[in-house]
Length: 220
Image 1 (tube, rainbow, N blue to C red):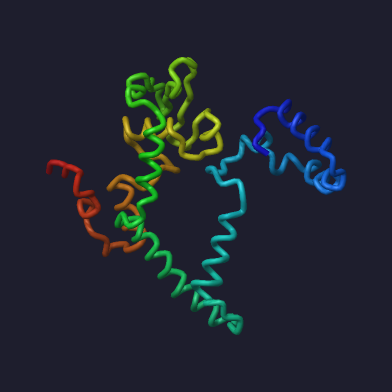
Image 2: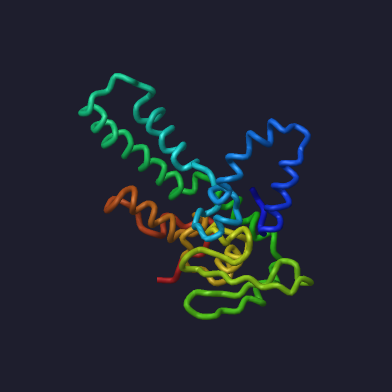
């Protein structure tokens, strides 16, 4: 599944089919015939943002069943529309506000974890190429590699970021130059303010309300 070359796919397939239990090999044969659908090598051009399963669909249906319908089965069409318009909208408003008010620590934890994977002095080696494209040196200086980060699309030529997932090279560019990445964690006051606007509209507080305590207020 995680092979990155056709040779690795062939070697893994041969090893799998040569296992002592022939019944297992017969069982997986239909899946191997559809390997273009699930092997990473054949999905490298898809923008999956690091999600290679149907977790988006599963999470949405779970919210609809558990939060909106409360596992009720007796709902006519009118009641279903009312629940979706009232309960579902209120649920997403609260979820947006949780992220806008920094109540979800996962964003900062992920951001800090990615930055810790690459030396800080690597920021001096970033080369802007124009049009929000940057060349970022590898975290291993002895490798001599560099990866191309496209800020507008939120992609990187490394393995972790080629499908649109937020990788350590994008995190370094974001930390050094700022800007908007479509896949970046919610770590800036500007993004939190935009989420607040989406949830509250005109009733949203000013952008300064969403600034962290340790951030410096911009000069007026």
